[in-house]
Image (tube, rainbow, N blue to C red):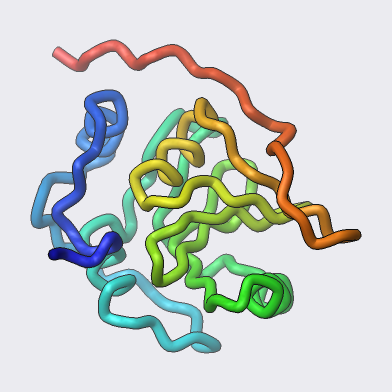
Length: 163
């Protein structure tokens, strides 16, 4: 069985179209390779993800989307939330709204910004939330360390097919 962060991915059609419009195809190798934060040692599974998706700008220009460049991450927040979770978080990119997008070794996707949110328990679900914000996420309540509904759930229309 393949690790949840390692390609191939089973992207739903709207997400697949967005990724393809950004230049992705199965087996893609980022050229040049993605620059990684010097403060973190990335495991092979996350490196495989970045090898295939690295450097892509996916989504809506200047509004919604993700740039798969992990160098923008806030080291202090990353360390604090990794400690809170008991799992190391690996930045994989940044959204147009300057949320850091991170994964853990279980394949879950998180967004770090003004607060901390679980975007999805699987890589595909989390990426879908980060791109479309059409699936419910969970936000960490830092006062009592519990998870509750993400306040920023917005439903986006399905993209037209590119022809």
